Amino acid sequence: MRFLKPMLATLIDGPFDSSEYVYEIKWDGYRLISIVEKGKVTLYSRNGINVTEKYSPIAKALKGTKHDAIFDGELVALDSRGKSIFELMQHADSETKLQYCVFDLLCFKGKDLRSKTLIERKQLLKEALPRNKQIVYSEHIEKEGKKFFAVAKKKGLEGIIAKTKVGKYYSGKRTREWLKIKTGHEQEVVIVGFTAPQKSRKHFGSLVLAVHEGTLWRYVGRAGTGFDEALLKLLHDKMKKLITKQKPITEKVPDEKQTTWIKPNLVGEVKFTEWTSNGEMRHPAFKGLRTDKKATQVTRELPA
Image (cartoon, rainbow, N blue to C red; front, side, top):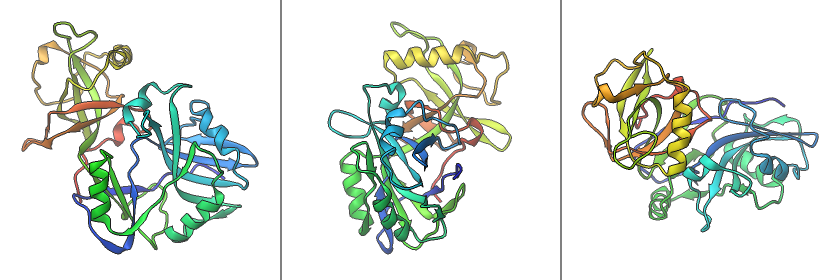
């Protein structure tokens, strides 16, 4: 019973129908691997950081699990209507309504299940999960991926995941057995700088964003929207500690003389309208910080 790296999905550009796949909601939160062993619960982020204390209500809810197990799922924060909102994860506290949406079972009753088919694992998952409002089984539908995607888009969800019914679980690998289809354009980014605030805004103006490309950092645009007052302060406090005279990127960027450079450590997520011909995001808006991924793992994500 040890931490197992989560299986990753491949981005594709549109939904499809197939009897060989099942379709699930793409939850908009933080990936969470949870280990329940002899009544003790340990929670891990996508990159193996122990976050049990940080999300103790979920750990407490999982204590109702009757048998030793390793679960894979997404931790989400819900608004008053019960919709998962990524931005709410930024200031999660004891008042935040958290749910753990579990979609896979890697080990159960001392047995490694990763070589079993997805459908077999999900059948066992229903048996394994404790009955608790904070722990949710991730339902799926069959065949009608296009209709499911249309509903997800109408409801403002991030997207859907298509998974092969007979697929095994490949820890730490990105395969085409799991396919993600997003309802809009989103990209993980690394903050490499910020500009001075203008007019009534406090703390900073825009964030300078990059992705990892080979051994270098590649400029992909600037985000000046998507912040509330609390997020502006939170980001500025974190960025002040990372200020450097060394420019992390080679490209020349707008307002470079007014830009303060920082070490490329902070990972965020943005939504945008499209990629431009020179590889920049058009109209990026900041969604929030990600603490579950290393900066060097952030690359430009294009549909396969």
